[in-house]
Amino acid sequence: MTNINISVPESLKSFIDQQIAEGGYSSVSEYLQQLIIQEARRKSKVTLEELLITQEEFETTLDELADDFAVCVGTNAPILSDYAVSRESIYEDHP
Image 1 (cartoon, helix red, strand yellow):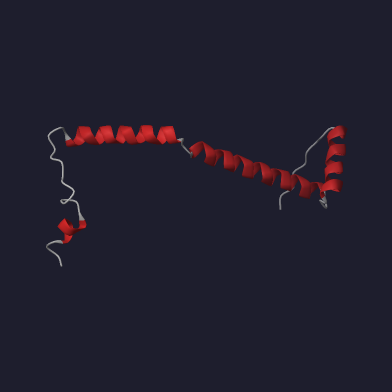
Image 2 (cartoon, helix red, strand yellow; image 1 turned 180 degrees about the vertical axis):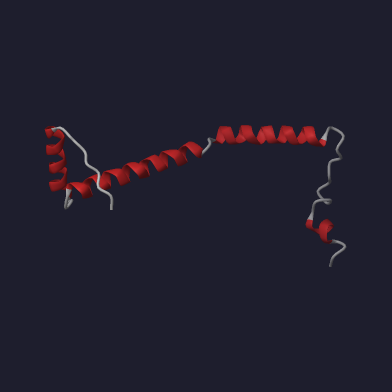
């Protein structure tokens, strides 16, 4: 394990000592390790939440994809019937 030395004001040292006594930590090192782990987890959660999109953003993206698809296919593309895309139609030559 690597050692890190930090300097803190006396008031903060008193607070840390109080937290160690109340929280059942065995040392300052253990207490600070737990604080750092909690902060890392919190930041990871924030990062994941930033990746999530809202329902409105999702629907906007779907609309954009549909518009892009329509441009690629063109306006003269034939519309397939329900039968054309049905299981029966797809497998009719393959019993």
